[in-house]
Length: 296
Image (tube, rainbow, N blue to C red):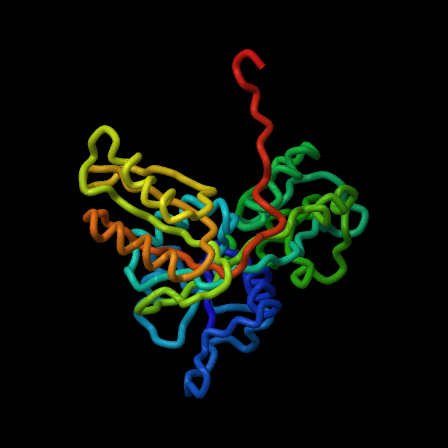
């Protein structure tokens, strides 16, 4: 059985799961889906914290979550995972082409644009480029209620399968077709991370046992010695005192990961493996930054 976070687009999460062939129901399980068709909708599991707790507490349940990117994880997801049950781990990643469209009643151009939280996340830059000031509504808001909020002169940004009858695309909607694909991951509760013999992207969080000058350098040295390709490093304050650090790196096989965490254990460095995502390359990559350095 598959679920999603309330703020996530059910249409996109379901499309990602369907195209990737994911299923939260174990082979031979007597569990039945709580929704009519998991290829078009997923079970609403509430907030991210509620969704993680539910996946950890119910057998045969997995969740489809927005990743950010396998090489550059969403900070909110990293933090939620580390604060959640230690058995929670992301085990697969896939992209889905967005299905957002901008529609209004025939002949309407202008007025306020009603969009939900997932739509704002994916479309905000494009809408602002076109001078649109969206009105944000919760993702759970029914389309009929959104149409009423838009009024006779307003419009909606919604997934194509949910366009109200008789509504048509407005000029500028074509720019939403140019959005980059969105990355989703499969979240499960497992006793151990998956075994892998081909490259995988690993998300590893760790907290040095001492927060002293050079402690981070010593811990990063373990990753360097393991020969992994570090692509992401982020720190966050910890209530226990020292900072915690989030990393994402390409790992050639599970033996390398096993050896790395064994060395962290030997150094009394706390750690959690938050994701093991099979794949050596994840295209499209994170959006690049063009830096402007001093003196350049």
